[in-house]
Length: 275
Figure 1 (tube, helix red, strand yellow):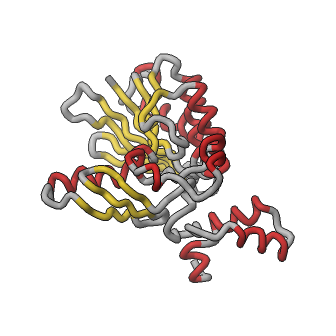
Figure 2 (cartoon, one colour):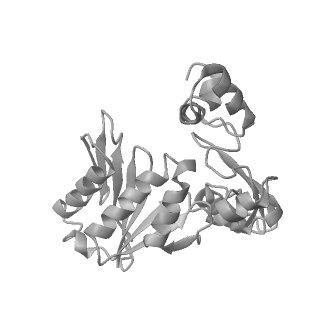
C-alpha cells in the first residue's frame, strides 16, 4: 500500500510518500514552497539523494501536479493511480472526528470554518478537491490538528458567551498543534513514565502551550482559531474583541482589513516594530 502524506501551508506543500509494505517505509519526501509568489522551488528527496530546482507555482494545484509528475518521472510511482491513499494533516475541523474520511460533508464543514482559518482551510479544501478528482480510486483521509484536545474537559472548551453561540454556530475552544503536542505526550511517556503531568511548548512562527496529564491534553492555550492564545510571530494571540470596534470607529477601516493586520502584522512583529 502506497500512501502520500501531505502537509499544506498557506504558501507551501510538503509531502512524504510511504510504502507500508516496505521495510524502508519512505520512498520519497520533499515539497514546494513560496506558492503563489516569486522565488519558489521544488525539493525532492529520493533514496538519500536531494535535488532542488527553482520553480514558481501559481497555486497549490500547480505545485501538487508538479510533485506528482516528478515522482512518476523519477520512477518512484508508475502513475498517480498507484496511490492507495492520500492523508492530510489538516488544521481546523471545527469538532470533526480527529481522523476521518474526506467527503462532501467534511468539505462543507471545513468551508464553514474557513473564516477563522483563512491561511489553512482554503488551500486544504482546494487540494482535497483536486485529489478527489484526480485519484477517484484513492482513499482520502484527514487528521485534524485539534483532535488531540478533544479530551479537554467541557468547562475548558466553552467561552463565557451565550450557549447558542457554541451550540448553533460552533464558537468553542478547539485548540491546535495537536500533532506536535501528541508526539511530546507519547515520547514523554516513554522517557519519563513517572512524570504524568507536563506542559508541552510548541514554539515557532505559530506557538501554543498544552497541559498534559497521563498522555492526554487537558488544557491548551489556543481557542477557536489558530490566531488565539500566545502572541506569535505575526499573530496577535488573545486580544480584546472590543479593541476591533474602537479601531474601526477611529480609523474607518473594515473588519477584514483589521483582522488581516492582527494575523499578519501583529504578534512579535508588531511588538518589535521591525520584523
